[in-house]
Image 1 (cartoon, rainbow, N blue to C red):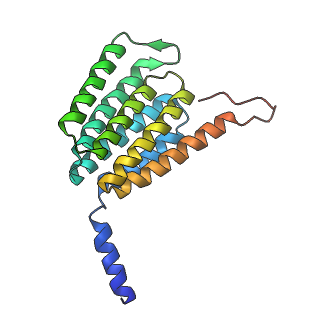
Image 2 (cartoon, one colour):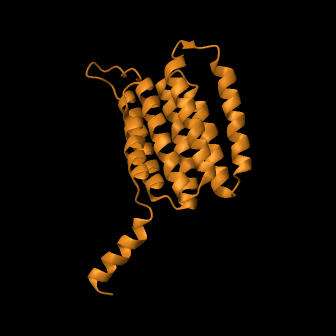
Image 3 (cartoon, rainbow, N blue to C red):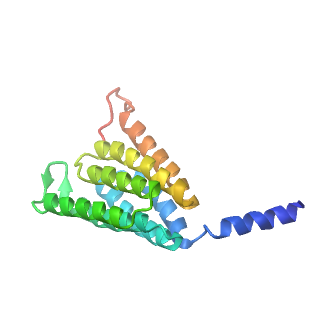
Length: 191
């Protein structure tokens, strides 16, 4: 195969996976992991979920699309109604209802292992959003990202897999940054 033919064949193989929603979601996924404030992390996650919802819809991954819609709603609520020392009264019933909705949507759009991975990822991400502490939230988001990596591998989302790797990297960087001692020798406070 001539080099030009290889480039053309590679482009045709990748072209189906290139879309504006996947590219946007990829950038937002990494950015969410390294955001310095919990609320910024959640708002960026909501934007990321919206972008990936459209990306998964384009791929025909309906469970992923549904989980992204639930994720977007939960992220917006968590950013505005949950803090380190406060939680609005409507949060628990809303999260219970959206978790039940996520379970029903997973069953309704069931497609085997991709759906199982998306459902587990949604469950872990829901637990993450309920955390008032950014450090605990990041740990749970790591588990959610691993589950979503399984979904994205199975549905063939190149952007999703790349985003998962970048998100996990960003979360690990933020966790390591919070654990390193400052110049006075004390551990930095989690963000």
